[in-house]
Image (cartoon, rainbow, N blue to C red; front, side, top):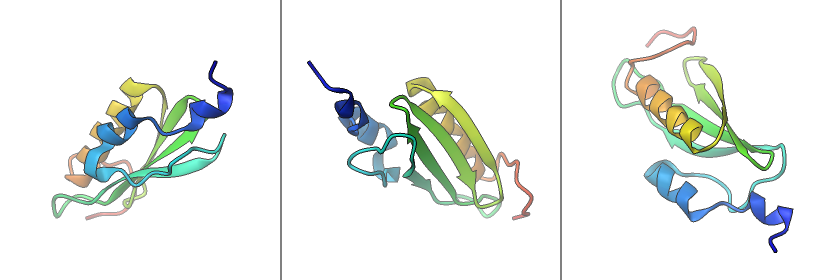
Length: 102
């Protein structure tokens, strides 16, 4: 039987999902924000974006754009997908909720 502690281990599919953007830890700490992915701007109108995960042990995601964008999602793989999509849109200059101008 797995202990609850094992729920904080980073799963191989998490690293695979974030790919080259992965900068996360080996193991999450309960309730503590951890930087897990970085998306550099891909267009002159875009901004660098960082994604954080908060493990409870379910992962909740926070998207932070250099433009001041701050968004949070619910937990689960579907929300990880949404966080990635949002990060890519901000990095490309196609979405922004912050106050800075490119």
